[in-house]
Amino acid sequence: MSAPLAPAAPLPTHRTCPLDPPPEYQRLREEQPVAPLAFPDGTVGWLLTRHEDVRAVLADDRFSSARENASSPVRRNLFRPEDRPGMLLNMDPPEHTRYRGMLTRYFTVRRMRALAPRIERIVADHLDAMEAAGPPTDLVPAFARPIPSLVICELLGVPYADREKFQRWTATMLRLDVSEDEAWRAREALRTYMRDLVADKREHPDDALLSTLIRAQDPDPALTDQELTGMGRLLLIAGHETTANMLALGTYALLSHPDQLRSLREHPEGVGRAVEELLRYLTIVQFGTVRVAREDVQIHGVRIRAGQTVVASLPAANRDPGQFTEPDRLDLTREPSQHVSFGHGIHQCLGQQLARVEMQIAFPALLRRFPTLRLAVPPEQVPMRDDMFVYGVHALPLSWDR
Amino acid sequence: MKIRIDHDRCRGAGQCTLTAPELFDQSDDDGTVVLLNEQPPPELQARARLAASLCPNSVIHIADTSDP
Ligand code: HEM
Ligand code: HEM
Ligand code: SF4
Image: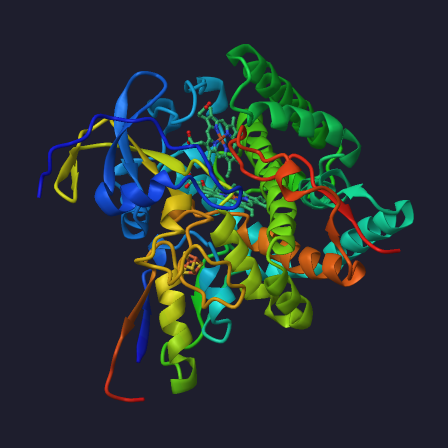
């Protein structure tokens, strides 16, 4: 089947409801599952919106993750060779296999669950501070951002006192509307910071992950400072920015669905499923992920040429009625079923078990502490992160009865 | 039912251990899957199938055998 192709259009980014992906994805999924996509750099590639196609491409080694060869769907590609060492997100096997193999042992289900008591403590401390300060509070700086930041800082051995700096650099890097110059300066600042930190850990090792990786005998040859800097940056960014947005946007979604919120309050033991459903429903990696075809590949009769960029839309796949019944309904008791919020294939999120433990502790604790939690502004005044790679809310003003 | 593991493909995402801890563990040495029981009893077979379907790298293969 080789239907005549419509002209290439840019990635749909216009949302009509803050909690739903752009409605255009629905039409594409039905009528044009492999749609020609116009990239800001002037090239043409493809957009995949069906769950089965997104999964298939992310598990297919004919598609490469090398971002230096890819176009970005939302701005000019700013990738530079200096970004490469240690950046396993952008690598293919066998390079990817080497780095991932070094890291997975530190992110297993068992190891992440062992962090639970410490995470519970951190969550309780932040709730105490919120309670002491009293309403109204912006949940983002009071709770959603500091908790994952503190956890990843302790795990890596990054001084938490430096959080304002690295949070600011990350926010600039992940914004769509900054100039190339500004984005580059933020990236350079974070790189310099991490390089100095790695040098410092060589002199003054501790028990945290950066020092462990420096000491590791297993990779042979041992990791270079450039590689350690790249891995450190990747883990620091991925470790705080993503979970922070899930916590704040997830709370907003719960407050907008009072029946679901009530069911989670009444059945906190169902939090495992609830977190998976929030991940699916909200899909914060909102522009999906990109791959580059290494050779010509046919999907549904459409020929994707070697070198073309394919965007696998995670939000569109997660709302595919072919995979999820009533996909646009938030149902915290939904049976587990292959959401792609953490990606799929060899790059599926390394930190997913950490993110799960953080969310499974933080949501119930927040709801327990403030039984009358509510928005302090009308819902339409909550500033949404349409302008960021990672979706969420810029701020979430909340109130409660004392 | 019999479970077979294609170990070389495993990247340690941990979906298996999360879904069916009675059947799968992750090695402390490298984070990859350890099969604890290749012939799951009937009450664990549904979760064995779920783990196989959630694994991002098609590591877990399930063969139906005539025994329970
Ligand atoms: C709810 C929170 C999170 C979401 C939604 C998320 C999402 C994702 C997605 C979609 C990918 C795959 C990208 C691709 O295929 O191109 C990914 C990869 C990755 N994530 Fe996460 N992530 C989260 C939390 C974390 C945390 C807490 C960490 C760190 C500890 C982390 C570390 C990583 C790393 C290192 C990769 C690259 C893995 C590889 O290339 O093999 N993530 N994440
Ligand atoms: C060292 C850290 C990182 C650097 C230097 C970096 C750099 C980049 C670059 C250069 C792009 C290409 C497009 C553009 O510039 O507009 C990009 C896009 C993207 N990054 Fe990152 N990134 C980092 C970490 C992460 C992490 C941790 C995640 C989440 C798991 C992530 C997810 C994405 C996504 C979803 C896109 C958009 C889709 C795409 O073009 O691939 N990045 N990043
Ligand atoms: S889910 Fe698959 S890739 Fe992940 S640890 Fe288990 S077997 Fe390995």
